[in-house]
Length: 154
Ligand code: ZN
Image (tube, rainbow, N blue to C red):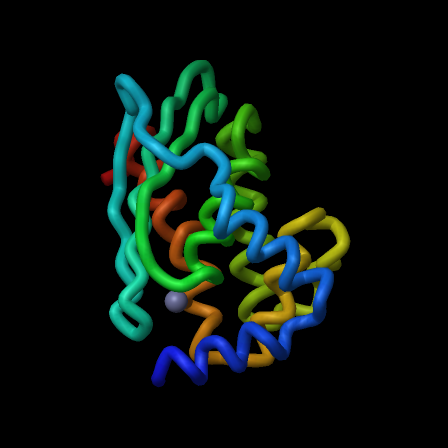
């Protein structure tokens, strides 16, 4: 897909959603590195060329710290930024539940209420463009792998 097609798809998202996505893309939250991460995992989405590396600091069953670095389209990077805001400080169980709910929502699971996901609802509009769903879920799958690594499940 050409970059024009990407821009056109992004322009088709609802204005409010687009604003949230662009805000996170331009001013990413929790972007950078942790001094001593418990685990670090890199994810790539070859379909679009997106890369996201997630670093987690796990302590007492909680996700005390999280940071990401990466490059790619606005949907992949803003999703990573929104994700770090959503899961920072949460218990590992809550973080895993969010991963399940968000990736389920993006796959079209209708039992999940998008409004329960706060700002993340903005990304639900991406479902109109099946090829971009992997952009939106990349950071989340990567976080899941990092949590597995942190808990010694790998
Ligand atoms: Zn992408």
